[in-house]
Image (tube, rainbow, N blue to C red):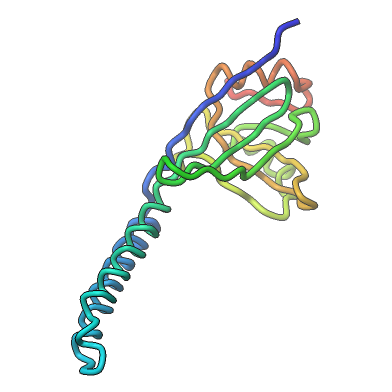
Length: 171
């Protein structure tokens, strides 16, 4: 029997919160520059301080550019966050068979099932669509509700591993 392997990348859409964060970071750099210019003792270093603040701002703003990669391999699901297309961080690893439930995120029939989660993590684009699902799993001692956006190939792979009592595909 062959191995089952699927991978998918989902880009996080800019939200109002991330846009306001970007604006706040840029305004902070401008304020730091003018404060440095107004204090006589550090006026000579104002350009250096402003350059350091601008570099820090660039770094922080680039960290707001996030993509999520879902990797499904033989019943294991790994979710990685990729920041600014250069740095990767594993945010979830789990065995799909151990998931309590997988259902569409807006499925009212399973709202109560997801109520047992201690935390909710959103590893989707941030826009709820037909392929926005959630699952309930134990991870690092916590009960997590994880929101993600699997494509049809990934959904088919999930349905081959999960029983119909645990996986509720949106029709």
